[in-house]
Image (cartoon, rainbow, N blue to C red; front, top):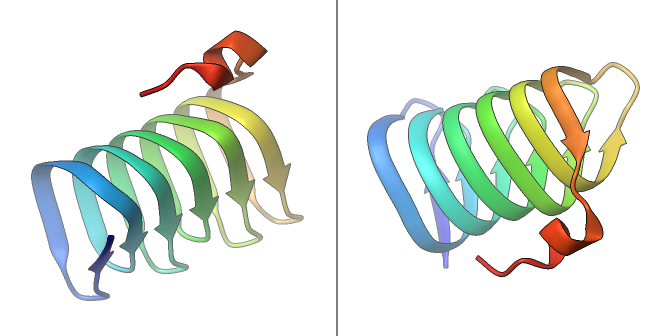
Length: 111
């Protein structure tokens, strides 16, 4: 199951559950527990996410837990409290805030 928030859509004040992949092309302010989040180049997410894989080409602000992998592309901007299993930041990608790797035990915790 995939939820796509299109380029001119603003989704605010929601809780997103049972969604395999959230694709953000517009603006989203939400709390989400899911398998994956993808933020497109002009997309923005503000809030709290708990996912296995996060792929950021746009902007993320808030609290993020990416249990398996966090990928910040060259156009990606990530700020806030960030926890990750493994991380890849391409040249040009930015991240700031409280950033730390998860311990192997934290990575294994089921949602």
